[in-house]
Amino acid sequence: MNNLKPLLEVKGLKKHFPITGGLLGRTVGYVKAVDGVTFDIMDGETLSLVGESGSGKTTTGKAILRLNKPTTGSVLFEDEDILGMKGEKMRRMRRKMQIIFQDPYGSLNPRLPVGEIIGEPLVVHNLASRKEREEQVMEIMETVGLRPEYLHRYPHEFSGGQRQRIGIARALILQPKFIVCDEPVSALDVSIQSQVINLLQELQSKFKLTYLFVAHDMAVVRHMSDRIAVMYLGKIVELASGEELFKHPLHPYTKALLEAVPVPDPEKRKERSLLEGDIPSPINPPSGCRFHTRCKYYAQNKFPCEQGDYELVDIGNGHFTACPYVRD
Image (cartoon, rainbow, N blue to C red; front, top):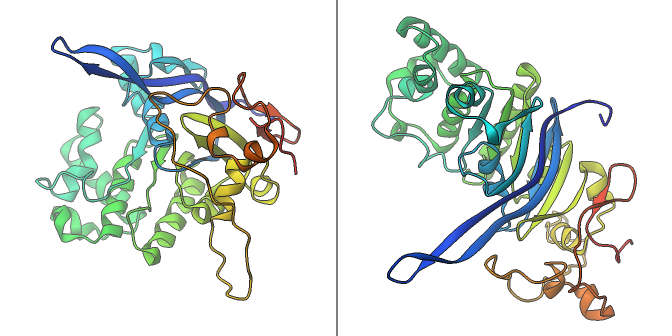
C-alpha cells in the first residue's frame, strides 16, 4: 500500500476557533481544536481517527471537507489543492467528497420526505431530471437496505438505524470517492451498530470507497480500519495499521485507550492504566508533549516531556509515534 499514490494528503492542518470578548468583540484568544495534523489516505483505504471527546477528530474531518474553513495547512485530493479552490471548481470537487453525520435525528430535515432528502444533492448539482432523480433515489434506497415504497415517508416515521441508512444513501447519491464517517454508529443501539458497520463495509467494497472513519469506540475501530490515527488535544500522537496498533501500542495515551476497552470474560482480569487529571484546555494546551500532564511515565521517570516539540517519528513498518521515551 505504501507504493501507491495517496488519494488524500493532509499536511500541517490547523483549525483555531477565535474567542471574542469585550464591547468591541475583539479576538482575545483561540481554541486550538486541530493544531498541525499530517496524514494521508490511500485509495480504497479506511483510516480511523480515534481519541476522547474534544480531541479534534470531527473538526479534522469537517476541515478537510471545508465545512469548517481551516486556519492553515494543505489538503490535496487527487493532487488538487482543495483549500485553494473557489466557486464552480470547489462545487465540482464536493461531488467526490461527502460526509455521514453522527446524529441520525438532527441531520435530516423533518419537513422533507425521504425521497427529497436523499435526492437533494442531485438538485443542488443539477445532475438529473425529476424522473431520473426519483429512479436514482429508489435504486440507492434499495442498495442501503431501505424499501423504495418508503420514498414519501418523513424522517420521524423511521427508527434510528433506518435514519442513518437515509444519511448514508444521501452521501452515496453523488457517487463520491471519499466519505468522512463522523461517528456514524455512536448514537445507535448496539444491536443496530453492527448492521450499519457491515453495510458501510459492503458499500466500500461495491463502490470502491475511501473512508475517514471518526470514532471513539475501539472495538468498532478495530473491525473497520486498515490504519488508525490516535488524536489527543488537536494532534496525532500515534499512527499504525490496525493490527499493529492493537498488538504493539507505543504511546502512553494509546495504551490507556486500549486498556479501557472492556474484555467480555469475567475470568480475565485486565490491568487498567487510569488517566490522571482532567483533559487540558485547547485554549492553552500544555507545552511540549500535550499528554505529559496525565502521563504515568512522565510522573514516574521525570522525562523532559514539557520541553520541545513532539512530532510523529517512523519507527519502522509504517508505525509512527510522537513519544520518544516509551517503547515497550
